[in-house]
Length: 64
Image 1 (tube, rainbow, N blue to C red):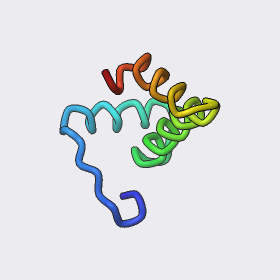
Image 2 (cartoon, one colour; image 1 turned 135 degrees about the vertical axis):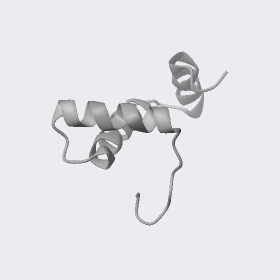
Image 3 (tube, rainbow, N blue to C red; image 1 turned 135 degrees about the horizontal axis):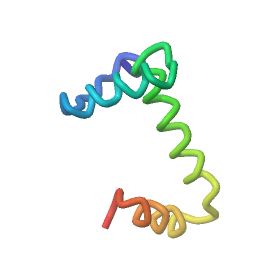
Image 4 (cartoon, rainbow, N blue to C red; image 1 turned 60 degrees about the vertical axis):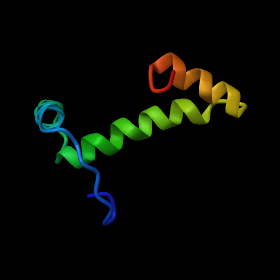
């Protein structure tokens, strides 16, 4: 997965990803993951500064 790099996911999360990917019509769980990450990163790329990125990440609950 991901160009030779591996990402470990909890089994419960992977099961959800597989289910939602199938329901949404993605060709694979990987395609669903890539789309979700690209969408999140696009929101961050709109930021004008590192501080704005940190604030967005805090707002999303990724950092405290």
